[in-house]
Amino acid sequence: MPNENPKSLLAQLTGRARKEGASAWSVLTTRSGAPDSPSDAMAEQAPAAEPSDQHLDERYVDEAPAEPSAESEAAAPAPQRADEARLDSLLERINRLTSAGGEQGVNAPTAPLAGTPAVHSGLAPTAPMPAHPSPPASTAIPDSFVPAEPTSFRAAGLSDSDVEMLVMKYLLARGDASGREIADQVKLPFMLVEPLLRQLKQDQMLAYKGSAMMNDYVCQLTEFGRERARRYTIDCTYFGSAPVSLDDYIASVKAQSIENQHPTQDDLEQAFADLLINKKMFSRLGPAINSGRGMFLFGAPGNGKTSIAERITSCFGTAIWVPRAIGVDGQIIRLFDPMNHELAPLPPGAGIYNDTRIDQRWVRIRRPTIIAGGELTMDSLEITTSPTTNISEAPLQLKSNCGTLVIDDFGRQKMGVDELLNRWIVPLEKRYDFLNLSNGKKIQAPFDQLIVFSTNLEPRDLVDDAFLRRIPYKIEIIDPSEEEFRQLFEVMSPKMGFEYNPATVDYLVETHYKSCNRPFRCCQPRDLLLQVKNHCLYERMELRLSNESFDYAVENYFAVM
Image 1: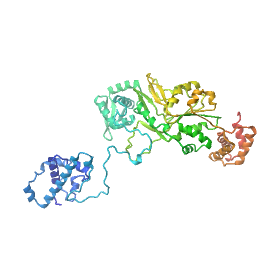
Image 2: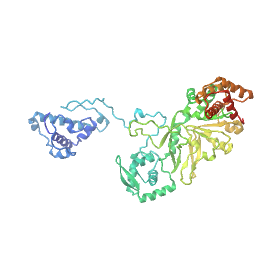
Image 3: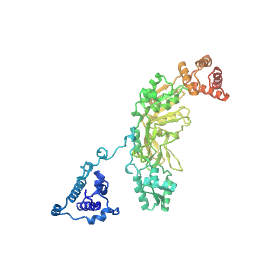
């Protein structure tokens, strides 16, 4: 290559390119894999001693020579003709790329430049990129339903006013926050929130207090903005995650319904691995769980009805997605409840950016298991609204959708059994419920959970035949046999720190059970061993099973039984 100044070659390139209406290096470097700068393309030439300039092409564009004639090209020396050939090759490639106008032209492979050595990057040729790339394999989500990140407020089921109210109430409470902090608070993409912030600034509702990282600004309310935010707060004090529409929530419940799940015996054995359940009980529980409808678990106290009900949800899979809040005609209904919902977050990605493109207004939780005992009231089954905050709370049956709702100690609630049955007699059959909002509107919501009524009483003594018909499975949890009772001692002794001693268990069974016709209960081995352990710890004795220790435990445990 001749020792010619690279700036003159760049001037020739830009001058020729602009004359032909093409963009020289911008298209070439970003689309065709060409060198990143003209100086890289001429790396084999001797660098010039002139200072660099960011506007190199503008400074030297006027120095570009005129289009040479045929006579001058014929009289030009060989090095100059070689440079002209390289420029022609570059311009031909630029024109071909820019005139293609689509992915085919942009991603088409190109031949190496004439007169330049081939550069091997060590990478295989890449295929054309799809219009919407899927998440990498490391962030693949195995769930049947995954909420996609919205591309607009309308796609999210929101209006500009809905988001504006949340943003301004948040700034009123916070004082100031960056644009990305605001977007994270309302759980919407920053690219959707940023235009709204600019509009609020133009309307003099907020001002930029300073700059923030990543081309962002710190926002704070103006006096006019604070006045408007106060009026918004009077209506409702909520400024958390933007709500999800009721239609989107109904669609999510349908996609994650327990009726779509069909657990097998292997699923049940895995879910009840820590309980001692015989095969006959599995054969009765399996079809009832598969139905996804409802069941009665009844029997004597202490045989594990509540423990069985708590583990039923594990048969239906691990996780579901629920919205943080639901919006119905401007009213906010909080659905996600940290007291009843256990988070099941996705594993973190490899990078610092969230590349999963998931709607952050939704939360990934384990399938819920909500237990309501004697404290259950009618208010727990309706949408409740705080008179001071105007924020509504979802009822228990809405929070338990796609999971299990256990009514423990059924028949011992503060409200009458008839009142509860009349409230649920239609939802149990139709699989949907009607809920009243504070503004007087009635909405239809999904009723999609496995209802388990756990009671120590006989179901026929509690409810009539019309209700029993809507609970298709009635399963009695019977007392364990003597063999199962001994097996429970064998399983629980090591967990309590004891070495299992069959002789002491024989003494316990013969002396304190058979002699007085005392029935066996599944909870008694654990409770008696705990009594013995506490006695040994108090007396600073070695943890050891003996006849005397069981006499002490039985005297305390069965004192009034």
